[in-house]
Figure 1: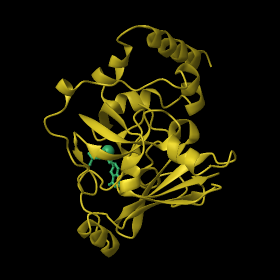
Figure 2: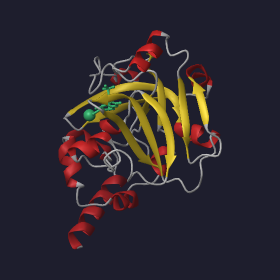
Figure 3: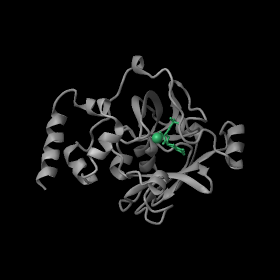
Figure 4: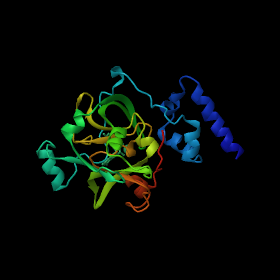
Length: 248
Ligand SMILES: Nc1nc2c(c(=O)[nH]1)N[C@H]1C(S)=C(S)[C@@H](COP(=O)(O)O)O[C@H]1N2
Ligand SMILES: [Mo]
């Protein structure tokens, strides 16, 4: 208990000092992840302001090259068809615990109010890159679909499989409604490329790279992820035991 309190105080104190976000910069992501291992997500929420923003950068900071990781081309026939059609007939399915299920076209998503942000992506495998992302805040879509108050998480179903297993991710409602949590259709001033998750990918800027689901086909409000996939809340969480919370 004492040691936990010491850790908490340390982090809390650090957050009040300018330049403290550098922790994430100087320490390898892995170290940071495991130094927080003993803390519950709730404890981290207590020491971090609920609405705290991930650091945003300037265009001068953009990485000359943004690595592609994981799937770079979904293999399904469905996806191939949409890709060929320039995603003109593709629809984002919004469902689960919502009062108004939606099917939103890419042009409608692009017509919604946009948010552009330059952020650093941290992959658990030990690389980072700064990129600019443009999209619609997930909170707008949740509001538009009139998500139920009982929903606790948002599930993202992706178009790509690893073998027979579809990639998926979940975030809680605090993360889902965070202002920097966007469904991005643009990157570095261009339309999002297939390699980076076209037509739509999640940016959940306070979390590690694997949470940022690419090729998002469906968004569902859910009460629990216990019955989805392997029950751990995400593809890599199921397969490799990666942390579900994955806060940076
Ligand atoms: N659908 C899907 N989303 C995914 C992945 C994937 O393989 N499939 N890989 C994840 C991982 S581990 C990382 S680091 C980022 C990589 O995004 P990038 O290819 O744009 O760099 O996407 C994440 N989202
Ligand atoms: Mo990653």
